Image (cartoon, rainbow, N blue to C red; front, top):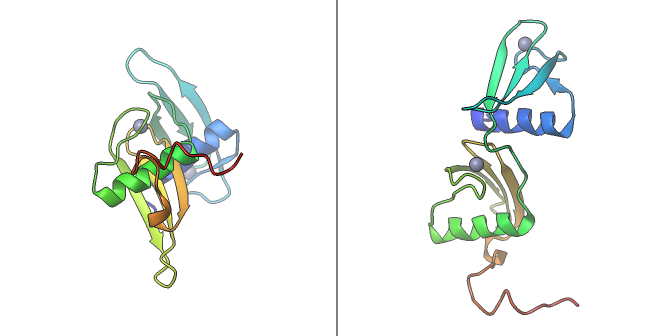
Amino acid sequence: MPTEVDEFRELARKYWAGEAIECPKHRGVTMTGSFVQTTFADHLFLTCPRGKETIQIPQRPKQMEFFDQQVEGLVENLQRGDQILCYRCQSKMEVDTKENPNTGYADYTFTCVRCFSWGTWSGHPSAAKIGSAPTAGTQKKKQ
Ligand SMILES: [Zn+2]
Ligand SMILES: [Zn+2]
């Protein structure tokens, strides 16, 4: 089951991508959305034309998708047992891990609980090596 954080992430992602936003409660119904800027709390405001229900998604800061290297850094933090914090607003991030028990490969999805910025990373966790060894990152393998 996707959490509310996952749901908000997807709704916000679709909004910023300009995609149709299907109402979570009414299949096939497209919600109308607008970005509302106020002094205290920018947010997305979505309205369902069928049920008239509304969804408010905080957007200060605005959602963004993290770069691969940033997400790899999060995977590394995760393995070290460090806190996983959003690069954008320093809030906690929710981590969704799907691991293949046979290969050890895993798919990670990190989502900020506050701004819903997110990033995904797939691979063997031990391959996440950004910054763990000071010399590893400085040597370029590919020219
Ligand atoms: Zn609805
Ligand atoms: Zn954030």
